[in-house]
Length: 367
Image (cartoon, rainbow, N blue to C red; front, side):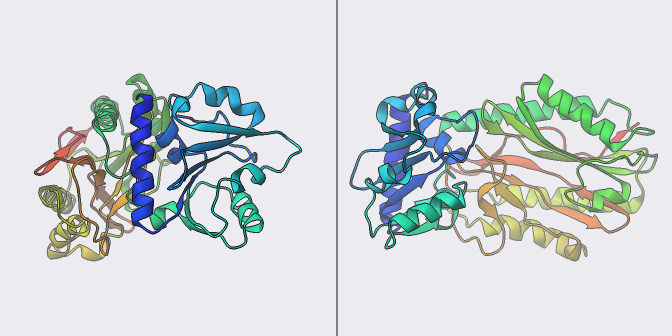
């Protein structure tokens, strides 16, 4: 990423904010600040750090004095003006000097409540709306560099899955298998592992079970959902395996979920409303008689965070555009028995969808 790349992002954000009726954007430490400047504070503290993107002025970053050297090392530093404030002074004064006293600003979801309240107290006529509510698609369309990083993270997750398939499951705990998954992700390039769902047998009917001390046994269906971050961008994939031969019911449910995942993927193309992805998957599962057991949305955006807009859910009428990246992960969960989920990260191309996870969707039998 060059300084010019960050300039383009900030200019686009200001244009989107103006089109949505905002005076500007206030960007706090977190994924938004990293996206616009490349700056990622070593620690998120109570000291105010805020990037002001306003329709009437150049980008301006207000930071604590002691953190200014770190800001100067950020790749976007050369295209922003920086003002620092010292401990013992009013941190809101340099920010409020940059704001319209009666302005309406979109502010990062990650902003501290104390800072928002401080701005409201200093500028009583100002108004604020969360970034996700006001500008939900701000980071939704990825540039080629972002797609490439997501693809690399997906390939690393795929490699971890290929390894875990060959590790013994029966007689080991979910936690042991999950620890193996985390180790494999790191071995293939992940700097951070965020989650390793290992739901065996009845635990698989809980979509967010993660991993516990249950011993996996012959006859268990096992849901494996895992991911983290590599080069700043996320991975998130799910495959469901079986310990020994599956029953006819388990096979039937698996085949329904696999067909639903394929139907949703086949619906991906520019101009289609995001909710149509959810509808395509849900129709297959409902028609098979398992509709009440599909208990979550079909997907979520991914990028600098694991969950971000767009969401593949009923009511999301925003339309897909080339560069959007999101999960497609239908599932069926039979309480007290087992669960099945299949998940790929997908990117929208000029005409269709392209998977960023490419391991087999077949029901793999593990030992």
